[in-house]
Length: 254
Image 1 (spheres, rainbow, N blue to C red):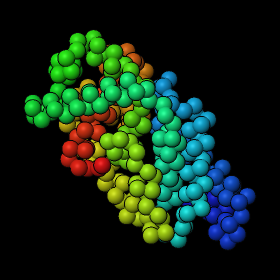
Image 2: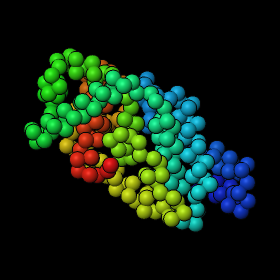
Image 3: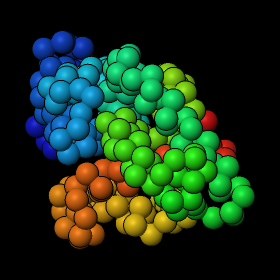
């Protein structure tokens, strides 16, 4: 830790003064901004940026209150889990998905899953459209509608079940029992996800790697692939759906 921050931590641990806690929160605002960015697609957001930051700050304050500096765990690692959890809670409390969109998503997921079993590989978009009994153009429209259906982020998909109703406490256990294992398990899940990405179609795999691991934005990825940003959004959403199906089938989560 930075010496000045370390000094603030010592004061807070001794006094539990809310003013000192708020000082720490200011020191770690960068973490909240970093996590919040991961919940936003370019130009598409269920929550406004300020709302995401507000929700993230709830998690940050909780992390500060629960953190034990004597344990050999970096605060940043612990706080990111709590910040993500707080934002997830806020997103799940919003009834933002139209019923028709939810129905379409379920149908697409079922079609992809059935085709994976039948073909023993990842199905193409024309194959998915044929399975649904619709034209590739209509499937494109469904994919476009799913751009606004945020599968949150690659890092957070491990905490979602089929219905997306997993509570934060199910994903992050009470820290009074120790959180070293939680962080280790979480990191193992992220590694599992990275391995599963390799099974996706090449273009979808590339998009996930460029967006979530290399930090490119959608406009930059569109230039790399020579497609439109909206097409990148479609492929990104579809890739996350495929990934969710693979993880559920292999019981990596959920």
